[in-house]
Image 1 (cartoon, rainbow, N blue to C red):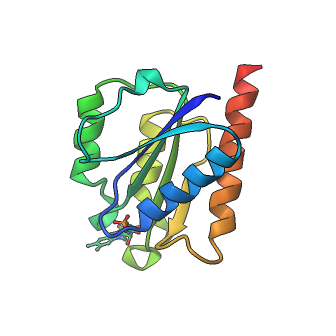
Image 2: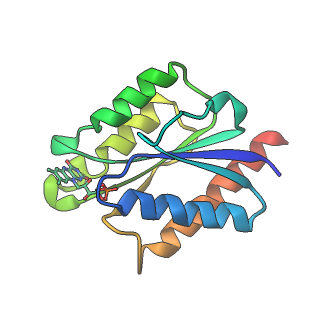
Length: 146
Ligand SMILES: Cc1cc2nc3c(=O)[nH]c(=O)nc-3n(C[C@H](O)[C@H](O)[C@H](O)COP(=O)(O)O)c2cc1C
């Protein structure tokens, strides 16, 4: 068992749904998971985890939500092995701004893996995309251990 941390910000629930799907997939692959919703009390110490999966929605004009920026500042250092997922909506600025907060977070943390971008709720056709991405993260992380 290896401990992974899932950290996410969610306002209307879409990013939370993605986080929960990722959690289910990791648990099914024998990964021990701690979930933390930003704003939900004491921040877990990312140093205690082998990987951090960081999720955010995107706000106006491709912005990163303030609570996510505050979280990044509060943690105060950049853990290795940050994998980023996000939800967004292409109607707010097309492909250029779609899930832009996730793209920026991945860049900030020098994520070694392509960020996951989900349009609104992951339920339905995008569910498989979330599961495949989660399994890809596990494979990537395992490869790093060899
Ligand atoms: C005022 C407003 C601005 C938004 N701007 C963007 C944007 O620039 N890019 C994007 O991809 N999504 C944008 N969205 C869509 C949200 O990121 C999307 O609905 C997301 O799934 C919400 O996540 P949550 O349900 O976890 O809070 C915007 C939504 C609102 C309400």
